[in-house]
Length: 538
Image (cartoon, rainbow, N blue to C red; front, side):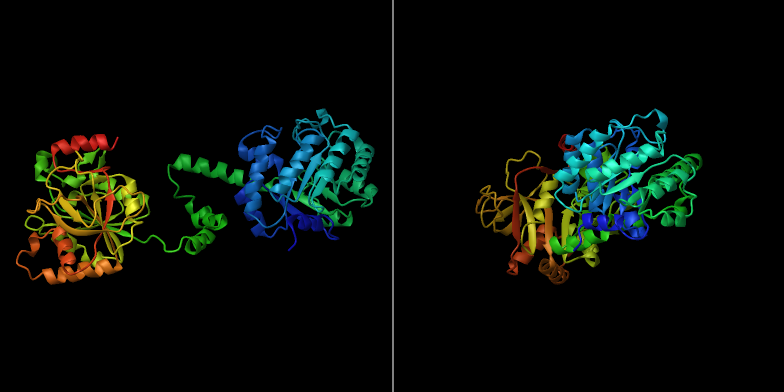
């Protein structure tokens, strides 16, 4: 496979006239390649402009090289850098060439002006040129240190720009050829191509000749072919065209206070995604991340929370604001943050007051006479082979949910082993497990034996408190659906809780696993809990 350096050399030495176009960042480089160009001009002027600084070496060479790395990574075609004066003396030139090759840049063009340079079209007659011998030393230093024999160094002659005449331009070009340059770029500020064509005639194709017709752009292309020009650089047209559109559209948006008039006239977001390679990332995720996170949440939020008195007069307790944000919104956002984007909320009391974006609401009409299991049944059509079921009045640290998703098991519940946790109020469900928490840093295979809201008569100490959250996978979903079907005929079905459901599943010989935590959560049951919740969220 041909290297980028070899590709650039073949373009420069081609028997026909070739063209390359300016780019100044990764996305413009990708556009240039997709337009069909064989190579890219890494324009110093354009890169300075996109940094918002002047084309006078105000952007450091390391900043330029960093941008080139993005451009190189975004493309498969070679890049010829507009390297100004080489950013210093012969030693700077050596380091520049080394760093460019490390980033797979195919070549550099340096101009025979003094450092720091100024743009060729600004006070050009006042710009001093470099000493010929000193500039030849830069070329030799660059050629001596390049690792790839095909890396190209183009010597840019500024004699015509500075008003020193054709003879000086030819003398300098010949010296640079003898110093080892791979091509010569002759530059002009004239709006006519006369002095460029005169140079080409006298030059007699001793080395490939490169031009930048920014000023004499109206010259017919065939005139360049007849003059044996090797390469034409369209040096700044990407930055200029994009800037024009940005100026125009920003004024329209400001004036109209809307984007409706321009939305159909600008590039779609999908097109930007395409240029960024989003499709490739999606494919890579499937390849390297294995099973994608496709988990949904079912959040039970039907109760009023009568212990909160007037605070829940017009809304359920899950809509009470904690630290400026509704309790339910905090829960939903925690799920979203780790990639669970679908949340089904089972509402009941004042369901119409729940105004949280990004959720689907199911209503438990029997919330006044029913319990948690009835609420869960209201979301049965939303069951999935991977879901998290949670009470809606929980506050918890993100790591609890994230770690839960890593635990194996068809049904896994979260148990707080810190029995003295001061944040636990109300009547918590005590968990009796196969093994108490030994604070092992490794995942433990802990099995739930029973959940109970009362202390057992045998005085056996519980292993902790169930916080009201569990993760359910495919087989666990089947167990839950079977249990609901079998329990429905019971006369007290509407009074059953989630612990009742889990205990019934255990009685059928199924294994429910436990993920231990130690604190870092609380539920909201009373006015005092709201004060604690405020501290918890800070």
